[in-house]
Length: 374
Image (cartoon, rainbow, N blue to C red; front, side):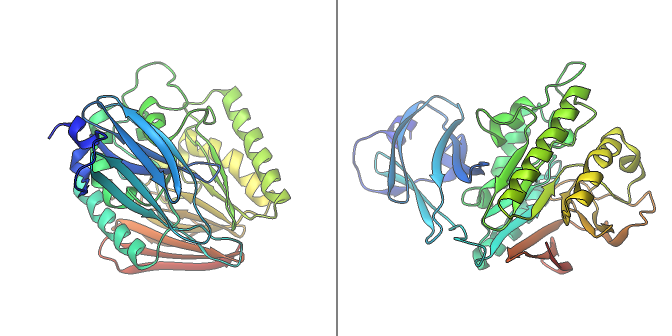
């Protein structure tokens, strides 16, 4: 069936539109303004009509295999909202979970990282994540970076979207930039925001380093580009200034702060512990979290689930959600929990300043939990 028939505007009998009809099936990105972005691509040219809840967003032209981004607007804090994509009697329907209206209502999100390398492993985590979402919905997902193994390989981005489609279609993503998301791009110093990462995980007019500051009813989330080896000294200073500005903004709103980076501040990996990225990260992060009483830093990269405590700050490193498992090569004296043998999904709830983490392995076994006051 041609896409002109699928996405044409002639009314016929309503038929569900499947993911296979798209070049890139619809998936969601969470913008820093808490607006939801819908991204999709079709195999041929055509036209669609999009609705979000009661809002008719109008018609959108589709070019062959070209990814388009549609701003759906904010989610509702009282009811879930339905996304409807229409064309020639064919329709796509998905529901987006409501947002908390205030600090009395819980904010729930998922945390995974390192979806690279192994498609079957990512599919396993995708199935687990979907199961948890259906039982107790997430408002969004934080992916700690290394989305793909070779950032310049467009086929790997295609595979990532295919393998995670069952959760990406109705849970907005917030992605951190990992070192593998730069892999394969040529040049002495790659651009601070990799081209394909920007295309698939960001939007126009994003911060030049790819940072995101996202204020919710429960917390301010600072998504940081920790690839300092790639950044210039000027950009590193810019990073510090930006963080201080966003921390001041969070304090003015009375919001606790959660930081997400790709590289971990503390880990049981010798190479990662002494890398330039980690050294610079410590130089930047440690003074800020200690000065401003920030309690949680989320990271990935080492492919080992680990939790450390340093001066009252909890440093949580996700296990892989597709990448190969790793093994400890360094004695981390701040470690309080380590399991290098598992893939992980962390379900996190924040309510009235209480941070509650429950981490599961790929077989849905509860392997770690933490409850602290932010």
